[in-house]
Image (cartoon, rainbow, N blue to C red):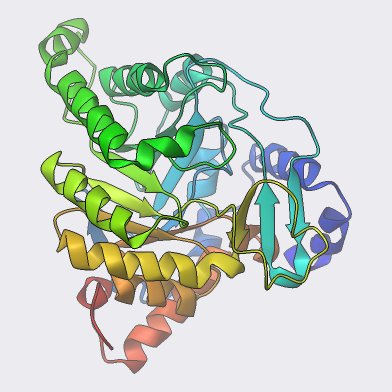
Length: 365
């Protein structure tokens, strides 16, 4: 069906097409069994100490305000990350702000964290009924905030207080919020993580006191960092040290790139914003290898960037990723992409004589 609808959707402005997809998902008419495949148990993995059906995730940016995460889970994702969520609702940057690069199977966006705000998102997450997938919330600061660190803490505190997610991602890598990437520098990142760890330790007793019968027990919230693909090798070492020393649960590699345009074919290649999709595939996979070597299994790695097939997912897992996420791939290949990736991954594992997907993480095949 997507192949029939794609020409119509690609004649629409990208943001209008995205909004149409969100509205369509709200009807919740597609049966979950449609996206299952044979021998899927080979893809089962442990993520944050719980079993999930597969290591294929949806990256933050698609369901920015947690409107359709339950419906998206029926497409077959093992992990879904909503956001980026900011303390206050914000419109984002002026339109147009999403550009297709069809010849390159890529997107450029300069959305600027448009979302409905923390309160609206928490209300939607409070009604989660499907525990079959791992749910992450990606958080960031408002563009006009005078204190980005305080915005991160405000979002984290409230999500943690109500146990609304399985993990929270600290987005320090979007190129579309001024000065945000400065938090990838050693001094600022270390300060941020120490503040976050202090926040996680101090309010637990207070938060438990606020939860009466029927509420979930507060647990330590796993924290992930989302990193840009454009960092230097020296930053890999420094960030890895902070991840280990501050007991960060994981790292997401990578966000969009604001460079890497020289080989692109599309006339949109010089638009300002973050580049995603196939052109950053090798860049992100290379960073996964570097972080895997430094982290030595002490933190989870989620690989993002150009995942659109079983082969591209397998490459990132072999490089050291515990799981992968996609977004742009679904724009170009439709909602059936997860099913196709699962089928291809299973076929690759069978050919290689591998019984479980976990057996290839960081391994040379």
